[in-house]
Length: 224
Image (cartoon, rainbow, N blue to C red; front, side):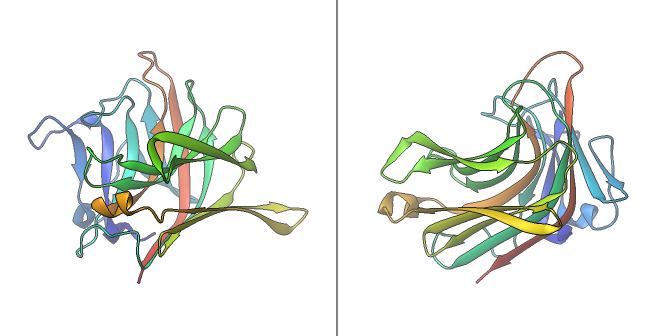
């Protein structure tokens, strides 16, 4: 787990000042930080998020989620940028499901949620992307079904403005991979800088006691 390259966003109001959520910096994560929303388990780290949690500014839903925080800052869509995650969804909340991975833009005014990987209530994984020539429109691609509690891997790669997303699961002791490619060659997308996110971003703001849990056992990022 490359926690030194991420900060953690929690579904509670900041205790360190400001109006945003509590943010745990990489330096604290690497020293063994844990809470009821982020804690070590046998297979890695569990991310727990209640649907009634506190939200980041401009967000509809709460999250227990890692946000890439590199010393070099955010990156453009040129070059090679890869995030590899091995995980499992342990508990689902209501609503639309859980976003387990993202490419997000730094400037919230320029169509920030470029790529989202959604684990739906029917146990299917849906890739959601902004249309290259129409940023106000979202496209969806089905990446297959993964059972609740089933270990799987996903990779989100941006290589010189070509998005490549894959999901791999084990079927009869053999890996089966589903891949989607999508180009971002329009100059509009050069206006923003980007970063990876992963974890448990519930798509519900129900005020009851519902919650979701995602466990991440492996996480790595690569940039070139």
